[in-house]
Image 1 (cartoon, rainbow over the protein chains, first blue to last red):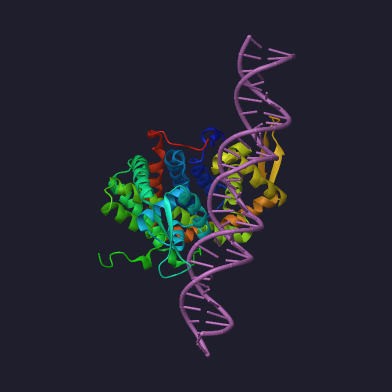
Image 2: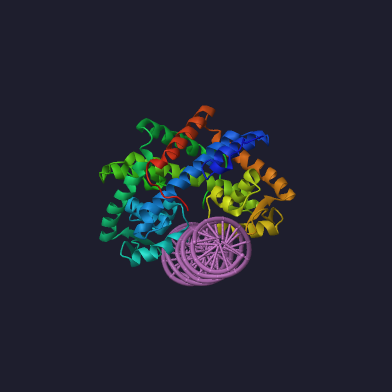
Length: 178
Length: 178
DNA sequence: GAGAAATGATTAACGTATTTACTATCTCTC
DNA sequence: GAGAGATAGTAAATACGTTAATCATTTCTC
């Protein structure tokens, strides 16, 4: 057994390796590769997100969620809260809560819908629009720092593989946010 | 312009494509591929996680975070809360809060540390151990359903690319959880 | 070896997301 | 066109995470 394990080096990322090893040797689990793929996917996503949030958005007074809402409104807006919820992957209530401070800060605008008395349209104000252009520039630069360790071809392969992973999801009855 | 956009088909996943298109045509952002890579990474991770949580863990009365804590304790335990926090990627306070119900349910055990009067060791109880074996079997089966749309080679490439993405992170001063 | 600083775990205060319940409007059916 | 049911948005209750403050112990320094 000796110093087969080196706990001193073990951290959030290298835990994946330990898990893989332990699942292989201690327990006879069939699908170790599946675990490795999805653990890696998860932790990579968490690391990048955490970094972007704390380096770009928090210093400007925005949470990751607020940014996401502004982002979809910027690119797909004006849109109803319902649609914003689908596109951001959060609940309608979350959109409603997040909008409040953004409207108060003059970034977002809430106007009554045209044909439906219940509905509302979210759009960026002029100020919100300018803010997003500046904000996304910083965001995009940091994204580039992350991805530039991969060649363009590697990046395209990565996107392609993730697309394949996700778009075949209808092969089984997966759970989605209602 | 015509029906260039088809909002009817737009959802959480296909928004990536819309974002890519809009950033390319409307705004002259330099690093569209970076955005596409990281949006894809993020959303893929979210979809898989949401599915695993709602299909496997919630029905058994566990949150995603509880599962993660049990998982690292299972594979790397017994360990101190501090180390569990690093390995799960959450705060020490979260570990402390999550432990409480798990101890109460008889899955987790909290024993005083050997050499240090302040410290504590978290470990699975016998019952917790048996539970994890059953639970992880279900988890692993579902993971397999997800990943099996990729060939083994594709899976290895995916892991390799994500590893490359992350392990070069020390090239710039990224933000990590303290 | 006594006092100061540091460290581990917990608690308290707070922010933010989710689910559930509610209100208003719209649509469908007869 | 009146009533049942569906839908949009919000509000209330709840769950769960974070950071900051607290307590106990340990380590460092003189």
